[in-house]
Image: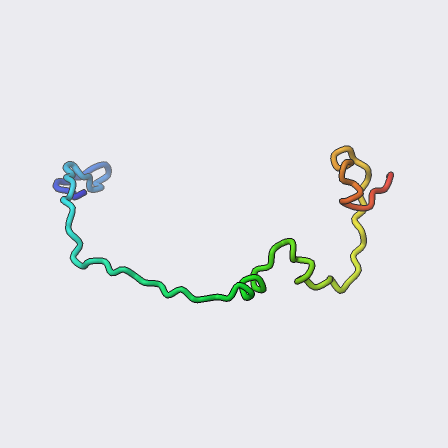
Length: 91
């Protein structure tokens, strides 16, 4: 869009009174196609760099310190999974 006419508006701010659409212009320079060289990567390298979650136990290191178990009081919200979640006490 191109502004053809203006006039002073509210508090002296310039206001457009006539706007016309601009005609499309042909690009001056043809766009060049960019060719990206694809790097060949061996499948073994991909598997090594991006292990699956199922392989996490094989590629992760054990935590060096002992972690105390999480102690939760009995609650109906997590009762179906309380044995898997943590050590539950009856407090």
